[in-house]
Image (cartoon, rainbow, N blue to C red):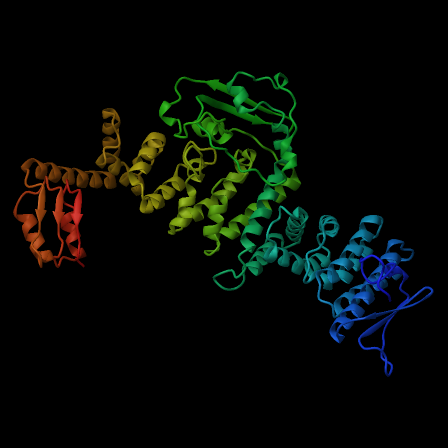
Length: 603
């Protein structure tokens, strides 16, 4: 091999892989070191490497390329299927036994088989299964390529009960759920996972098999070791639930938007047909963009699969106080409008039998996910933006089933979980609004609402703000539940009175009579009155506004001092350098005007 005239490498003409007839290592005595001999038509070529390792690498790589070309040729023009199957098996064996370490070693055979299947669509089911079983060993450590995913999806749909689904697909799907980082880049992997789970659901033990599969994905310990499993499962669930309502969503895209209805364009013919953008985004949209409540009250909404009619009745009784504090005039969404009037949960959505089964299966999976303590915080934050289409939220079966998940969030004492019941940001609805009386999803008399309020009040760092929003939007339901003896609501009404949340005198009187109508309410209201009387008494007596306790004073000294005189006006108390402990708090909370407390250098 001489140097070419132009510096383009060491060979004058390239040798194509298909032209190589044989590759051998030179091993006779006195042969040149580290050489490979390639036999090509019209002669041989010697390649010399720098060391034996590199020579072996070249040798195996050339052999691999030569064999791959042979298999591509044989399998691109199949004549007899038993021969094809045999060739696929030897191809798989070659990939598994190759000493080369590279992704393409396993991917190339999968792509050859994938091409073969996409070009031969008239195969029998048995031939399908034989091919899937033959390539199964390659799938243990590799994601299937897109065309192969499509073929697997078809198999799951047509033969959900085939043993291949359980035996071959299970480890493949487990691998996808553990290792996939982004379904956006490979949507067919998500589709395959979706179809696989539906195939499990079609088995005799249906949901039990799905439940066992979720358990196997979580693992036996209290903490799932694979951080990608939950987000991947949730992504599959959201996409599957979205697909159930696709028919309604596509028909909605041709009906007038709420903004146009508000501006008086009620006839769909008034507008130009828009491109159905939904179809360009297969992933479910995040429902309810930041919005303000419109004055328009939705009277009734009827959904048919062909189009959506929205009847709007303008009423002047819509409370101005209900306007959310977003301060922009973005389009109100369906949830916001449905929130205003309880009559609007009349949207009737009927799903076909297949969509109904899919919905049932995937909502059940969300319920299973919410049962795991370690998954609940992430699940709550993934579901916080309400990532479901509006049609799902207007579908009674869906909201009824999902209620279990929301209940689990409301029972969880961790703030990172139950704080996700509130909206992501101001001007948006959260699960709290949807499942409270008057919300689209509320199907009880406020029991879930009461448990949500209970847990949120327990950890709410903006208690007064939370009480204000309850007084503005949910005072009716709070009073009704208090009337029925709900202790949480009785406490809420007492706090509203204590913090002077309610300005209107008549409303205050109504709250008082509501509290006095039950034993628990009467008792709590009396305690509130006693506290208020003591405060007024203390403030009437006056006393100093500033006080510094002598250093080395104890809890007993503080108690003695505070019980000796009147400290109703005390605003500034310094306990610096004293020996007081946490026990003195019970005396400090009785000081009605206290604003500043100095605990420097105390316990």
